[in-house]
Length: 293
Length: 218
Image (cartoon, rainbow over all chains, first blue to last red; front, side):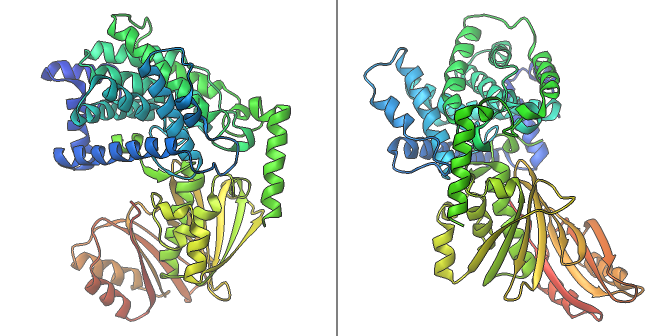
């Protein structure tokens, strides 16, 4: 019942004539020895934490621990100029809000990681708001996201230190795209296409955080990766296909991740972390820490 | 691979290894030390020292020492919480050799009575690899017994038969001693929960110095 690949998951779904999230639930029941209702309840609990995090982020009454991010979800929600649909705006806001809460030592669901924790909730919650979708359908979205992400975890990596940001925000965006299609009753092919399209477009993304903190560029990147997922889902629902199948995109991601130098995998040695401003901020943070010691 | 490892854990941000893992290490250290701690020196090595403030590693470690789980909102205010509880603490930056980049060495108790070394090894997973001079492997994935006992023939057998007679299966066991015929340490990971009577039975056995139960972290 272990799927470990998109093609195997598709096979199981078509053999049984059931949607992939049902296969994902069955596999989870075996893996974790939980009853179906317990699995739904655990996901419901996660959905609740996600809602709270978005609300908390939009209240904007806290600061990030490193002091390099914050207030942008609020800024966006008050802006009179938004170049996109209401759904896109809500999605960007929710992603920023969650990522800001994470940077401010608030409570989040690390999915696929803490640094990329704003993407899946932003898409699932905003789409549900836009289309008036039930909690059950939102949970379906999260189950799908988790199932797709677990394939990447077993075949490649979800860690920025091992694979760069493509493995965190890239996969987060792909999981969210697949979740969105599942929530709108898309076919298995469409779900996988959405996943593959989103991930392909973020391949090679490096992890170069300023001062090694989950703030710059991570917080804002969550907003980009979330709205990017909406584009991928829209394309897939329109019948656009990924020329490279999802399994092979994941392989490519793993290969690229291995080839990326360590200096661009969470070590804060190169890229944005090594810019003049990046280094200056790093030094300020270091000084502040020493003063307080 | 559970989907809840991908869509989870629920945690206080910002970093699974520097915040959630740190809280878990603190909790493990608390259980190993036997509960409430009044004085703690926390020696931070590598990334733990550099992300100490920016990732709230310090607050998470301290929160864990007070028993907070990684999703406990009190981690954010751990310093105040510690003051209110009369826990005094000190952070030091150190350079340890041959250890993982995210490593902390706890010295707990009035005179630094117990030393516990642990690392956050990625994705919130942790490993305590040394208690005082004993090499151990404690991950918090299982209920774990730490038994310090006399180093003589039959001791390990007595412990494992006692567990077996209560239908408790051993997932792993690691035994080592400091010197021949001195004191030895056994770390035993269990598949089933340990009840109070089995614990008391073990603690009262001849040749046992002490027993600690380190419950699985969730």
